[in-house]
Amino acid sequence: MSYSIEKHYRVYDDSDGSYISVSPDADGLSLVEIRQVLPGGTILSRITMTREQADLLQVQLSSYLADVHE
Image (tube, rainbow, N blue to C red; front, side, top):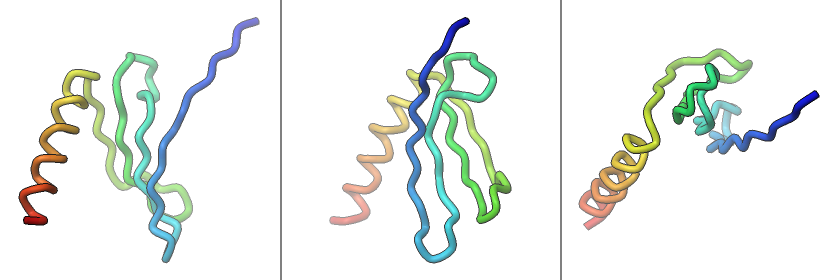
């Protein structure tokens, strides 16, 4: 028997319980998955990407947020 551990990171909207989740992809393809989940667990949107794409997205998101807050 074999076991593994996954980490899932969530950002919750405290007013209604919806959240954005960042985790390994559900298909086990070594991808990063971002989900927007409504209260009750309904998945509103899902995007998967490679680690390299996620790294670039992180850089661009940080750059965008820095520009917007100037």
